[in-house]
Length: 160
Ligand code: HEC
Image 1 (cartoon, rainbow, N blue to C red):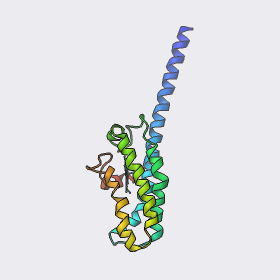
Image 2 (spheres, helix red, strand yellow; image 1 turned 30 degrees about the vertical axis):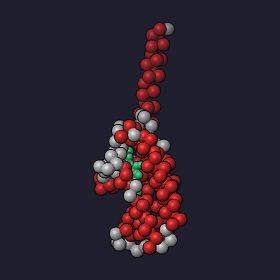
Image 3 (cartoon, rainbow, N blue to C red; image 1 turned 180 degrees about the horizontal axis):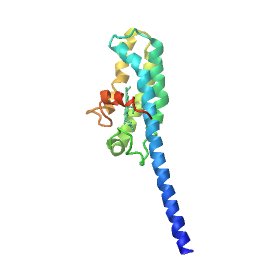
């Protein structure tokens, strides 16, 4: 009987470990997918800011919608068991969670405001940078929650 209990306990511990690893990988995948959806939708407006693509209101509205939909999913995908693995998120996410969450909440508010305020090329030039500068609040040396944007864009080629 005692041997059975020990074996059963060991089996439970082993199962628990497997579940923890699986959750971990899922959360990392979810947040990377959410960030990718935003980055993909942002590609055309980014070209527009540099004068490399003509103004396109639908593309602007599309990235704002992508932020509204995906930023909350991104925010919810940082459980304590998803700190390591195929991730670029730094330890600062967990150390400064309140600040990290506040950046995301403000980002969503700004994206909603920009979706209303941007109606033409002039309003795009005035309003878009206010939303886009938030990327830098997390990416790179200033934010410290994730690598610089150039390095992060390369990550989009990884299979998830
Ligand atoms: C609240 C902080 C925050 C903001 C704001 C933010 N990012 Fe990120 N981003 C991260 C973190 C953290 C990761 C790393 C996620 C991981 O690897 O687990 C990431 C990952 C990425 C990736 C790589 C995705 C992949 O394939 O792994 C890209 C590209 C990216 N971000 C682009 C952007 C762009 C563009 C913006 C602005 C429109 C932006 N990010 C705004 C925190 C942020």
